[in-house]
Length: 120
Image (cartoon, rainbow, N blue to C red; front, top):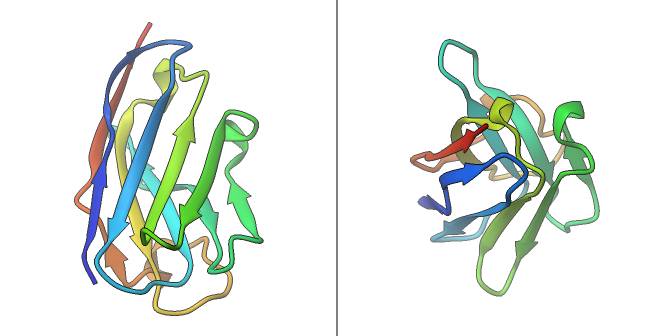
């Protein structure tokens, strides 16, 4: 399975972006991670195979929404009220199974990363 992430770009603080992650095959749990310069990769949000369980890291709760479209085998991350601290390369990831999907090591497939830059 290959993942193709898109939707990154430059946006002013307070603006919005929607990231997309198109999968070439079937996947179960999906997640979005980000890595800012000089920092470790961290999980941003995750969604289980049915879409019924979602996780958000504290810093994005109420601003970001993760979702998926099974018909299009695509996952999304809607990002609102962006601030400069959200600047990072964002990666989508997917698993061949379902479960507690908060650790990056659990993911089997990774997209190439898309850069999100938020200016102040």
